[in-house]
Amino acid sequence: MAHMCRQLTGSAASCVGWVGVIVATATNDWVRTCDYTVATCVRMDELGSRGLWAECVISPALYHCVALNQILTLPAYVQTSRALMICACLLGLPAMLLVLMSMPCVRLQNDTAAVKQRRARVGGVLFLIMAVCGIISTVWFPVGAHQAEGLMSFGFSLYAGWVGSALCLLGGSVILCCQGLDPGTPSRENSFYYSRQRGTATPLDPPANHAKSARV
Image: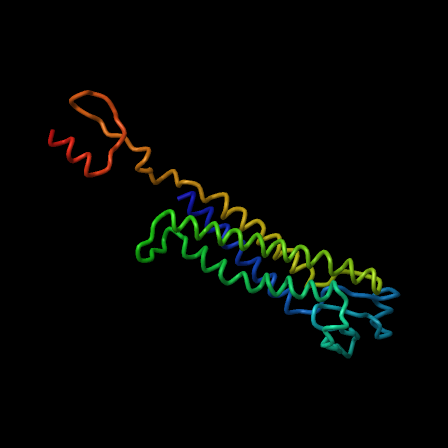
């Protein structure tokens, strides 16, 4: 029961983290740039917001964005962050499916405990890769923006990316750590049976050999 609870906890954390990574990738409020205070920049229409896909100007009456369509002229940190965040979003689907199919309550045809463990481990590794991609992107992007334009503050999208990456890292680690042998399910290799004739406990043989020894 504890094994299943740990796996459910890791899966839930990873799923929420995946949603956070998708939100960070889809929105453009990663960093905000300004040469003055926030109030002054808003009044002067000089409060800038930059994301993976657009640059925006924030003012009381207008929220105007310009798409970053010129891929070849974009800085390296923007292109790399885009690629890593897209990879993280795409890896979330197979990772979630593998983890869900490895749940004890889900049974597929010809399913064994070893197959479920392999599925869970692969899913956990994919979540860890997602976390690494998200961490690299959400750290490199603000550093590059600060060197290029002068960073004033972090935006909502960047916080969503940090939280999502942290939850994917936590969830993937929990999924991998709880993939040992479930103590509530005894293994046949470690099972023993008691012999009335000899009065000793001997390892349990395969069913065919056990039946043969019983006839003797």
